[in-house]
Amino acid sequence: MSHQNPEPARTPAPGEPEDERRPTFGDVFGNREAAAFLAAYCLSSAGAMLNRVAVTFLVWSNTGSAALAAASFAISFAPYLGLAQVLGAIVDRYAYRNVMVVCDLLRAGLVALLLIPGMPVPVMMAVVFAVAAVQPAYSAARTATLAQILTGEALSVAIALNLSATGVSQIIGYLAGGLLAAISPYTALAINAALFAVSGLTVFLLVKYRPSVNKREERRHVLVETGEGLKMLRDNRVLRTVSLAIWGLYSLAAVPEGVAVLWAVHLDGGSITQGTIMAVDAAAAIVGLLVFTRFVQPALRDRLIRPLAFAAPVVLATALLDPPLTGVIAIAIGIGLSTAIMAPLNATLAHCIPDGWRGRIVAAANGGLQLSQGLAIAVVGAVAEFGVPLPYVVGAWGVLGLGLMALVTRRWPTAEEIKSAKAAAAPAKA
Image (cartoon, rainbow, N blue to C red; front, side, top):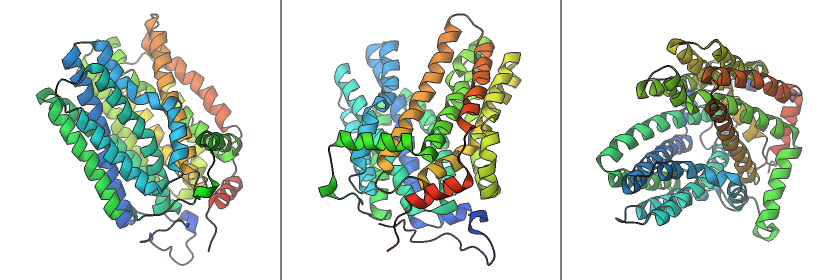
């Protein structure tokens, strides 16, 4: 199966090198499949965020337990502790588009179960975990599907748009979830189920079916295939190094948002201060991604990855100065902008994974990403719990991050190595 783009992006002008061409956002939105894919993803992502808020509020309303309410939110990360990697191997067995559709419809049905009045909390938590367990499979299939729809630099632009859409959908989903849950959590959940259903229907109708390249007769035990995916991620130097860079960057970038409530307390502020820190971080990330991907030459973007990998730890290290609110906001903005390199990093990862392996590799990479973020926030919060002022904890984390990124980028793959990895992953021409 080849990577097809039914409505290809703009053809390079005569004499314009392919790797220097900068596709526009119109190249992505002008592709019917890509536009439908992005719209469906926005709906699904907003639904996932709305679900977290509505379920947390519902559990709190029914039990009055802060611990159970927090657990209902935290449980959404649990599948990444091992289940995600197995699901990735299962995803590779089927058409990626179909997996997306099934995941959305399955989540719609599961969320609909939460509309049953008087559901016991243990049963509710089981349903919440089931909804969360579908997310890794959906994420793996989503990334794999996008790499089938678009190729080359158009894929980089599409990834930037998807990452930006994630931020926007997260903000909208959380805000709408909070407002709707306050009115009626059941109304919020009903809208949540409808968003998943519409997302699945959009993908089914507007995204082309492409069968899996993995033949049924060649399948082995799912755990064997899971192990093979982890082994490829470990042994392929480009995949391994780029994944480590993504994990390292997010273990740093997640901190200001993750400890915003603690920083607000340190500054004698309240929920408005917390919300401001989180909002400017998300907004800066969106702006940085779009500007960096759209207006910086592809070849220059690749050369800037290594030096810009140090931007996040340097920004965090300035917290050692214990800045006032304006300084903390500046740190949040700087951290958001530092994630601009995520688009080319993710594009490189997508280009270097052979078709038929994307579910496993993406699931493994996403698992590392989720765990690195959670671990970073947990460590910073735990150290602060011992009485160390938060700015010093965050600043020290930034200093440690400098060493981490130095290790990750010390033996960064050369342009030729990345080119060779992309060529090896490309489907054979008919």
